[in-house]
Image (cartoon, rainbow, N blue to C red; front, side, top):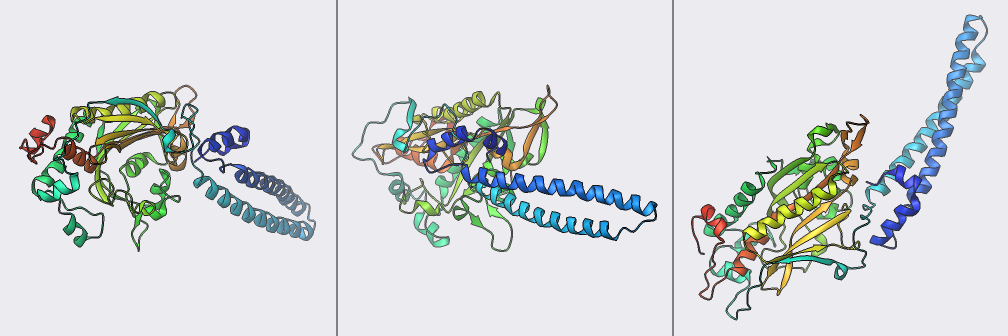
Length: 419
C-alpha cells in the first residue's frame, strides 16, 4: 500500500510514477478524500477540546453549588456532533483505504518505461539453444505417450487444467522439488506453511482485494487456497517489529499453489505451463530499505543458479512499467527455452516490493540508530516453478529415440538417468 504521507507531501511525483504504469492512474481521489477527512478530524478535535472545557466547568459549578443544566446540555450536544463527525471520518477512512488497497505500487525509478510487454528489456541470456529436431514432440504429447502424466484422468478427477502425474513422472516432479530445497536451504530457512490463508493474510501481500476472482475460496470460512508460498511466508511477521540485527531474513518454502487464473482463458491450455494447481519452491526475503536492491539481485541469481545447474537455457528479462506486477516496484522474469513454442517461457518472477507489502501487512523493524520502527522491504521469487521446470527438461533433453535424459544433478534424486 502506498504511504499516505508521501502522497500528501509529493502527489505530483507519485502520480508521475503511477502514470508510467498506466496513464489513467492517479492518487487524486485519495488526496480529495484526505483533505475532507483531515478537515473533519480538525473539527472533531476542536469539539472534543470544547467538551473537555465544558466538562471541567461542570465540576467547578457543582463545587460552587451552581446549576449545571445548561452546560450539561451543551456537553450532550457536543457529544452528538462529535459522534456524527466520527462516523463521517470512519466512512472516509474506509473509502480512502479501499482506493489505496486497489492502487498498485509505484515503479522504481530504474524500472524501464514501457507501454506493453514488448518494451521489456533482455538483461542476459545463458546456455545454448538445442538444435531444432523434426522428431521432437511437445512435452504434453511425449508425457502422455510415455504415461508420465495422465492429462485425461486429471480432468476426470477434478476439471480442466488439473494434472495427474504417474510413476516415474511423479518421481521426477518430487525429485525436482527436493533438489531445489536442498540447494536453497544452504542459505534460506526452510518453511512449511499452511496451504490456506485468511483474507487479512491475502491482503497483506496484495492478492486481495484486487485479484479475488483468481483465488479459490472456502465457501463457509474466511480461508483461501494459497496462490503461492509468498503469501503465508511473507506474512509470518505481520503486525510484528523485528530487531534490525535479525535482518535480512531468508526463507524458502515448497507448496502446491492454486490459481483459478480467470483472466487467462485460452492461454497455454495444453501441458504443464498454465494449470490451476502446481508445485513451486518460493524464495522470500525481508530486509532493510538500504539493502533491498542488492538483496533483489542476489535472490534473482539464486533462482538463476537452479537453471544453470539443470543446464537449461534461459534469459533474464527486466519488466517495464506496464508489465510489472501489481505489488512490485522492480521485477526480473526468468524465462526458460521451450522448443515446442520456439520461444522462452516464464519460469520465475523475482520482485522487489519496497515497503508496499510491509505497509499492508504491518511488518516493521526497529532502526538501531534512531530506535524508531520502520517498514521492512520484501522481496520474493520462484526458485523455481516445478511443473514448468519438468516441461523444460522433457523438451530440452528429448532424444531422437523418444527417451528423455535426466539432468545429472537430478539423478541422485530420481535413481534413473533416462525416461
